[in-house]
Length: 82
Image 1 (tube, rainbow, N blue to C red):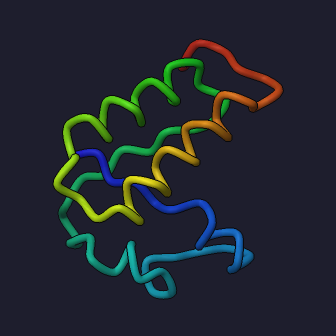
Image 2 (image 1 turned 90 degrees about the vertical axis):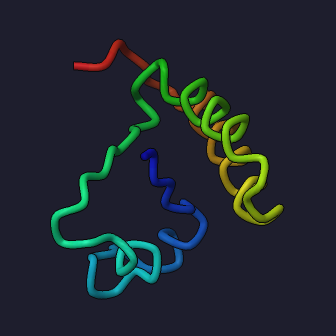
């Protein structure tokens, strides 16, 4: 499962941890997560595909994801994932 962390919420906090982020608190201790970085050239497309697969999600969550994808596309340094 792809788990998106809304960047707008993370910016309000200088740094989020599992103990301080409401989104991260939902993740079980043994649950795997996958992180996308804006520098990864495929990240924006991956977020858009997540949106397409999760149209049942709240409008706010979908909007956050779309805005995240737009910001990722504008990232100044992109490269193939390593």
